Length: 278
Length: 346
Ligand SMILES: Cc1cc2nc3c(=O)[nH]c(=O)nc-3n(C[C@H](O)[C@H](O)[C@H](O)COP(=O)(O)OP(=O)(O)OC[C@H]3O[C@@H](n4cnc5c(N)ncnc54)[C@H](O)[C@@H]3O)c2cc1C
Ligand code: SF4
Ligand code: SF4
Ligand code: FES
Image (cartoon, rainbow over all chains, first blue to last red; front, side):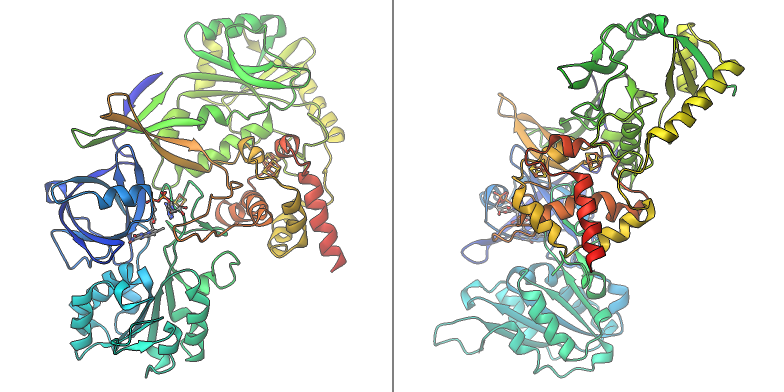
C-alpha cells in the first residue's frame, strides 16, 4: 500500500479556535469560533458546519450567526451525546475541527424586497437566527418582518438579550409562546400554530421561513396555507442524520433528495409530494 | 477490428504470472461448492473462468469496507486527508459488475470530488470477462441490459474454444498486452466466431421479468404506497446483507479511531447499510425510516427510481446478489413481479 496526502478533499478540516463559551440554558451552550489565520468562514445564513473533535468524530451544527458578523462565527449546541458532550467540556482557547460551510442556505436573493414571516420552534431559532440577524443588518432590503417563536417553557428560551432587542425594535413584529409556564410568565401560552392566525400579512408578498422539530412542520404549514401564503413562498430547514455532509454517504436522504447538499433548506413545493419529507 | 487480439488459453497462466511480477493481480477463485470470490492470484492456476457471481462484488477494491480518509494529530491540532492505495489489475469482471463500477465512478466523481475514490480507481486496471450463460436463476441482467458489455473496462476477454478474443479498449490495456508479448492479431475467423457467440447469447438471455426496461422507473414511482413494502417489511430482519453485497450500494459511516499513543489516530469510512434501524435516526429520538418496509422501499428506489432522475440510469446491475444473500428469502424478481401484479389489479 502506498500512502499519500490528498490536497483537495471534501473531508479536509480547518482549525477553529474557540474564543468564548457561554452557558445558555441547562443543556445548551454557545461557542464563538474563529478560523485559524483569520480565514473567513464565508457562509450563507442557513448553512451548517461539521464540527470535529479528534478521536470522537464530527457532527453537523448550524451556523447561528449572520455572515454580517465578521471575525468569528457562533454555534449553539445542545448536549445530547458523544460529540456534543465533548464539545460542552471545551473552553475558550481550545481548538475544534471545522468542515464547511455545507448545505445550501436560505434563498436570500428571493427573499429580498418581500415581507418575511419567521416561524421558529425550539432549537429551530438557532439556524433561523443567522437569517434574522442578516435581515436586521440589511433591514431596508426587506419588507415587513415578523418573528414567531415557540418553545416548551421560558427556561428553554435562547438568546434572551437578542429576543428583547427584537421585541423593542419597531421594524420587527415579534411574538413568542410557550407550551407551559409558571404563573409569572406574561406572554402567550399555547402551540406556535396559535400565533399564526393573528398575524396581519399580505399573503402575495409574504415568504414564510419555518424551522423547528420534525413534528411541527405539518401543522405550521397548514396554518400558513390557511393564510393564503403560496406554496412556493414557504421555506423550511430540515434536519436529518448526517455523516459526510457532501451528498454521498446516504444518511440524510429524504426520498431522492440529500438534506445535506440539496438542503437543509427546502421550498415546500419541492418536498410536498416526497413522502419521506414531512 | 484493429483492437481485437488473441490470447491462447494455454498462455493465460503465463499472462497472469508476467503481470503479477510487478502488480497485484486480483481474479475470481473458487471458495466452495458454488461460492467464489475475487482474491489476489500470482498465476492463472487458481482463476476460475466459469465462476458464477462472487459473494462480494469487486467494489471492495474501489471502496474498501474500511478505509482511512483522514489522519489526525491531536497535539499538533492537525488533520491530514490521506489515501492508501495500490496498483491492481482486476481480472475477470463480469459485465454486470463492470456496470456496477461505472455507477460508483459517477457517484464519487460528482462535486465535491472524492479523491480517495478517484485516485484509488485510477490505479486499477480492469479486465472484463464475457458471460455466455446465466450465473443462476436469480440474475436479471438481461432486464437491466447488462448481459453484454457497456464499456467500463481496459481489456475485455471473450472465451471461445481454445482462446480468448480480447477487446483492447484503452491505451493502458494496450500497454499491458504489448508488455506480455503473448497476443496475436485476431483474424476474420475469430471475428465471425465472436459474432456467432453474441447471436447465441440473444437466445440465452431473455428479459427475466415481464416489464419493459423503460417502465421500471414509473412502476417504482407509482408504488411508493404499495402494500408490497409492508409484506417485505414483515419478512426482512434488517441484516444488511443485501446492501453489503450490492455492487452499487455505497452508503457509509465515518468513524474516528485513536492510536495507542492516545495522540494520533485515523478517521475511517466504513460500509454502512440503509437497512440498519438507526441509519436515519437523529437526536431527540426521531427516526425517519423506522419501518423495515420503508427501508426496503428506500433501497429499491435507490436502484430503480432516484438515480434515473439524477443520472439517467438504473443503479441495479441485475447481478442477483441481493436475492442470493437474503436470509429472509426476499427475492428481487418476485418483488418487481408483485409490484407489477398490484398495479394490474388497480
Ligand atoms: C443540518 C443540521 C444542523 C444541526 N444544527 C444543530 C445545532 O445548531 N445545534 C445542535 O445542538 N444540534 C444541531 N444538530 C443536531 C446535531 O447534529 C446532533 O445532535 C449531533 O450530531 C449529535 O451528535 P453526538 O455525537 O453528540 O450524539 P450521539 O452520541 O452520536 O447520538 C445522540 C443522538 O443523536 C443522533 N445523531 C447522531 N449523529 C447525528 C447526526 N450526524 N445528525 C443528526 N443526529 C445525529 C443519534 O441518532 C442519537 O439519537 C443539527 C443537525 C443537522 C442535521
Ligand atoms: S439491487 Fe440486487 S440485483 Fe440489483 S445490483 Fe444490487 S445486489 Fe445486484
Ligand atoms: S438481506 Fe434480506 S433480511 Fe437482510 S436486510 Fe436485506 S432484505 Fe432484509
Ligand atoms: S450527510 Fe452524507 S449524504 Fe448527506
